[in-house]
Length: 238
Image (cartoon, rainbow, N blue to C red; front, side):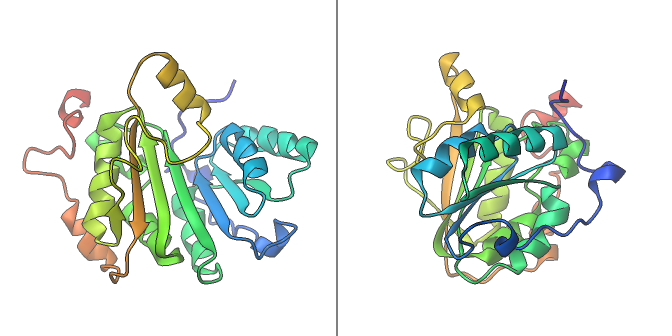
């Protein structure tokens, strides 16, 4: 059985493994790239890749057994525009993103990440300031970042981080919201949540032309509040 939550700060997940370049991953490495961070079992991208053959799709997942299973399915389906890789987004992605050809990254999705509620565990959350700045640096103006979760207290600090960076503009409710998914495919978790009559919290952002803030400045904006919490569930969780 695969563990549902993995501590990304554990020693085994802190190894700085270089991710392969695009030329080693895809039949046509020049295609625009969609990146799904935390791709889990891969069913979202396995459905997306045939619908968008004009793009390459890459899933990064920290649970190796899920990557292996997703890659088995990809090979069976013969999808040359899709790959799944094992890695820790905050350790392995920033350097890899910096080496991408300018303008190639088209969309980054971060969907239903592990809900680390407690303030003392905030460093385990996927979207950390350094990773966000690496994503923003790799996205050309107009290119998109999509977040969604069924946990409002988890997506709130992600939105706070994105908006504090000043590097993105939020899409309007007609394009993305609780009733509107801008993507043509739902994740497995999304389907389960909606089938249970529960809400899904979504945000779509576009890269603007603003320069990126220094990492230290962005981190300083996100220091815990005087009450010691950065979202309304932190105090209860602690």
